[in-house]
Length: 208
Image (cartoon, rainbow, N blue to C red; front, side, top):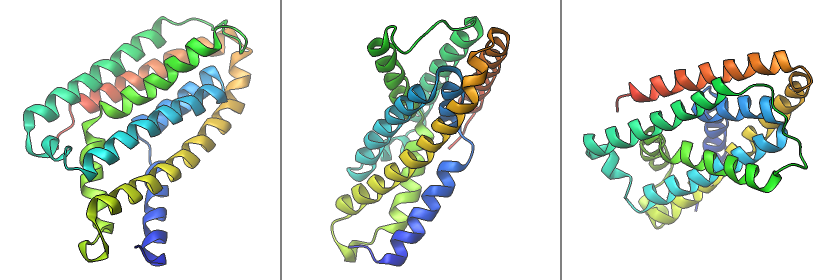
């Protein structure tokens, strides 16, 4: 369905876009440094689950609503910003963490997975980005458009999983040092809170 040149071009573009600083990879970076590489990978899985939802929405035309309706875009935008502020508030209030891998693992990991999904799904710019990006590589003469868009979205998710997974591993190594120092961890929590608050402001003031 796709020729090799198209796949290489799309994969390269997806790789560069995944590396570009944004709410998702910054959240992965801060959570990996604060909580460890496993949490970063779980957040990444949650974010990629959100991308599955966006891919399906674009493929079947649902996301076009957010491009056409200013009200829908605004409501989802402020919902996402509010959630980021909630996370920022939690980071500002957090002290040095006493969490260990053996303590409450299932509940905490599921919570971070859910956070990743919510962060991604409530960002309307992801839907609009998919609407603008994916169709550039799909052509009606090469087959059913929904199937092409799903295939492209799946490839984008795989690339994102690899890039964000690498960010999780690297940040987790750096974060291991921070977790040995309560003072350094408090500084990192405050930094994470400031970053999340900044991302919330950026999302709240975003336009189509």
